[in-house]
Length: 512
Picture 1 (cartoon, rainbow, N blue to C red):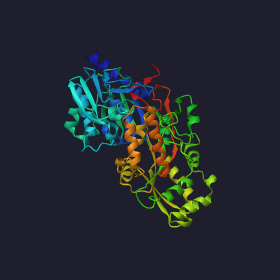
Picture 2: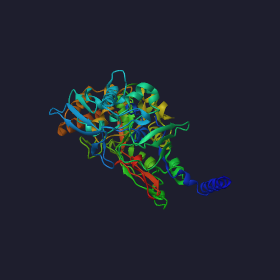
Picture 3: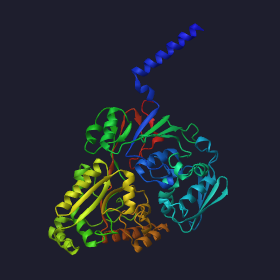
Picture 4: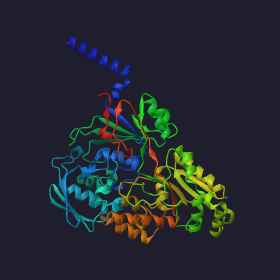
């Protein structure tokens, strides 16, 4: 007995010595990933910040379909197969059997699909994703593993952006009903490769590997998502070893990407970054004034000052190779001449810009503060005062939805289907995500028509006309689609989507 005691002490001491001399050994099975700010919700029906919310949701939940990793090709996920009716209004899904929800919430069935989608379109749900299922009338349960989506009209983007993105993720009916919506938003229950563990006081979100995942088991036992809104802080955390994956600033990308201990890539971004004018209240309900601002605010200066000249100018809400791309004419101050701006200001009731004071709301990040300062300087050249207010995400979203600002700068993540990208500027999105607070009946009609056809040519024509309506009303300025600059330590081997979003459950160790 005494001999066994000494052996136990010896082994314990050896283990402690190993951990002290090699602290990383205790973390070999854990992966730290930076996200650009605090996640707002983990409920797929109420996603608010794609870059912070989506990587976590995408690790916890599955949809009926998904994007093939590394592509935007849609492939089965929780669905085994599906059949579409001749008139494109009924889609019948055959579900995979034997898939379990996390934390003993039972087997995934057709009941959960019906619940997940119908809670989004319910009148009292106030889900921002209701537009994503705009033509969904109801979901019918055929049997335990067969479910049918009944559409009022065909949905052109059902398989391109609705089902494979957050609106299509399946939640546990039992868990939502037991917890209630508010609690579920911070205690999600899905079927995904990782199980939610903790959302701590530092806003770090910890997930544990799902040992019973129905597909390939994840390599890492634990993932911690750590909010770091400033890319500079992500760079420092990467170099100090605090995180394994983060984003680089464009200024330091070349330097850090050439270090032996890191790898990095530049990915094209699907997003659109833009200056939005609040068209619903004085003084920017004046179209002449908005037109003047389009000449004054110079996107090229913003790209040089805030993006190190590495991001390209955007002339459309869409990328060039997307259905419906239309290149908007640029409002070039050099071509128009300053006299034209002075004329517009006078016509708007502000001769020489006198007495014009505008409120600008932005994020409390270094990049967004810099963009605000650049716009402030540009407007000051025409005697226009801009009060810049930098806010954290929650208060900023409140101000957006209240419309209590004159100008703001935003980045909206797009998808591969244009209908998703245009929906946020509809009349019924005022008070939600329509940051222009702009209403145009023809825009709404064209969008609805494009949503209810699979005719690609008609959709393209409508999207072009919609962009012209936005352009003619001078509701804002497209700035850039931006780039993503992920970097990681050489110990890990990550997988990204085509637009540079990390797929955490596919990350492997490069040392294997």
